[in-house]
Amino acid sequence: MNRRRTETRTSASTFFALFLAAAIAAGGGVLHAFYKNRQVQVSREIDAIDRRVEQCRLDIRTTEMRMDQLLNRFVIRKQIEENGSALRPIPIGVIEQIDATAASRHSVASAAP
Image (cartoon, rainbow, N blue to C red; front, side, top):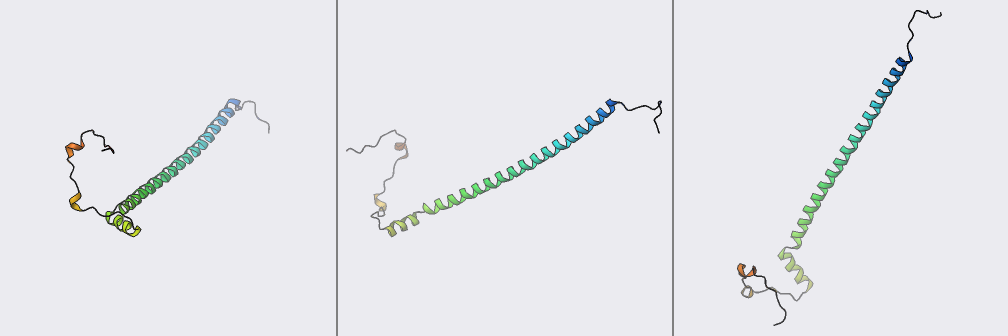
């Protein structure tokens, strides 16, 4: 069961080429898994950012609603009355109309008469 001398032997370069091909295929598989994992991570980060953006939008809408409630003049009037403040409504006859062209002048108010 000896080999015949006329048979061709596989050379070392063939084994080296097979080993190199297997290493390249294994490296490609590892890189594919790495890139796919990174893609999933980025997708999760994007989803988390989208959720945070939606939460911020909801917070903005809630804050605007609360501001509108707090700035409602009827609510402010009721709160002033409940607190027993000395503030009273201004009669309509006391209100002065300001000319829009006069507002464009650069004047400085003075506390001294």
